[in-house]
Image 1 (cartoon, rainbow, N blue to C red):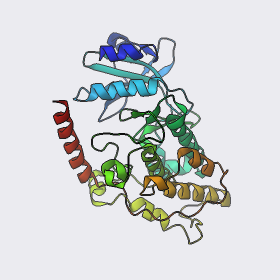
Image 2 (cartoon, helix red, strand yellow):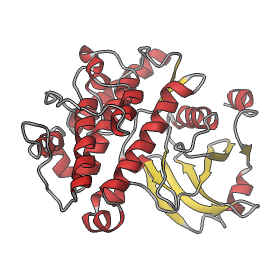
Image 3 (spheres, rainbow, N blue to C red):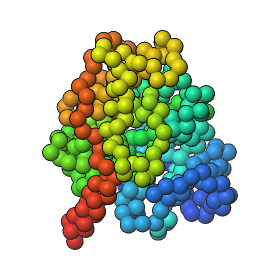
Image 4 (spheres, rainbow, N blue to C red):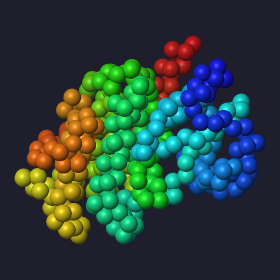
Length: 338
């Protein structure tokens, strides 16, 4: 680990000691949230900048995830990518220090109907969708080495004080030599409901940047639909293709959007554009999905006549299938490394 970090240390932000991290977080006194990766605390750098401090969970495989995140995000500079300001690696203690995003994640604004209606109208949602698309286009085409995120979802889109979106959480990211290239990997990765078909079964095609495009498409459909967050039990019972089906019910044969919330004519046209782009992004075959460059052309109006895409016939596997795939991946990985 030290050798790997030594190679990239000049390319990434400052390295802090664990005692520095304790001072930055006031002894971990302000918890912002937690997940399978670990816990996030609010802190303040010596120069006064507020930061979000992610303390990685001490578990098998976390060293690789940590190194991936440091190298992937530490070498990126884009207005729609969250900035890594520092890191700490002392034995089992692994910490990432990010710029603080005052408005939290996109998730809470699209899963809470009241908050979404009062804070983010369709025009603001479109701006956020465009910002995320720009960030993904940069990852796929703007870096010296392409980066596949593999976990695009509302929880990983953070909003600053002006609701400018920034892509976060690169723990599952993989580097690729070419944006058009196919990458090799063991098993599936990502979050149920946002995973492209080819990621969990290679019979649908090779894994590439188009896998991120799929996840992005599911996310913007969710942004327009304002779907409520499901419980774990509901997620097990419900096919993840439900959301595209639900959205399609609000499109007529000409691709016009039947209102499912109060919108002006302008807002309705913007919501329609997002829906059509989202449906193109979640096409079953990767080759039928647009690149993020074309997604931007469609969202920003450079492509004015949007065709109605065919209804996708497949979505991500249910959670039970993903658990089985994850177990198989871990077993295969242990055999390979022996």
